[in-house]
Image 1: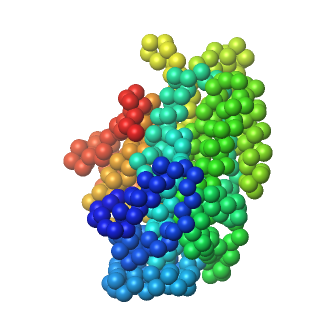
Image 2: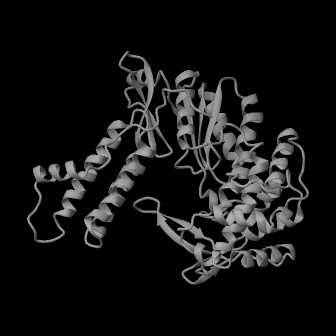
Length: 444
């Protein structure tokens, strides 16, 4: 949360944070009053003004044209408990070559209220969340999770990995179980009812209203926080207090939202952990995906064991990277990673489709700027230690596709590779580089 202009509301938020930190058992009973005009004005200003509009078709700019009056009316409805979120607009984005991921796009006013609730919950639960959790948290990100996983395997007695995928997590979260967990810390009836309204608001899909009795809408501002609260109790604290006290060797978990892996020393512990996870999730109406969950041997002895057993060394995927056991130049064990085949294929297809569509729509100098931003974004995520070959490979693919579709714009003289190389000298694309090194101390 960014505090740009500290007012009375933010001072209260700060007091809540301090109280939550000092007393982990304290239950907050008065929070909804924080959703006043001053606070919601800050929420409005924090929103991305270029995001897609919801079913009401009101943009960030449109709402802001009469901001104070709109906020006063919103606060009035909240105080009178007359506010009701508008159903989200459901859209589908590619998840893989064969699957699509549903997203809910809220209306502008829902985004404002959701942001306000999220900041309140964040001020409390950031004091409770454990270090093993990295997803959708301030000053925490996926690269820190990857670095932590790297260090655990490199410097701890890790010989096995437990991969566990929650089947349709965001679509199957029990509203009742989730609200039960929130009530551990919050007993403000007004705020609890407001959160429930968002959970049950439903969505519009192809013109039809769909009412939801379970799940949290992917794409909403509030959803990641609610998911983290549920998984904090279902996974993180359970693993810390129960699992670690019932295994005979080292074990740890690294979680990014609903994606997590367990690193374990002994094989018999992995079997107990996997069964424990299955039972734990079943208890809360969730299911471990049978085809995407497994126990594998992995660590400094994996390559040697694979040779003895005449098999390929095991690998696993986490956060878009395939992790595998490797040897350093000095002959020592190290963990390496590369862009997963599935992610690489999707990225190549997206690049090819975009270039084919954009080449004749706007001038080259305009889409070239977008391409440069896209390349930097790719390196920002995939430019991690041991994945230099992966980002170079994608750079070369991009160059190949750019030349191909530029040459198909018209019947003009085609650019051979020599001419195209000179073109790139004048209009260079960002070169591949490692952005995130896992060989330096993390900044926490």
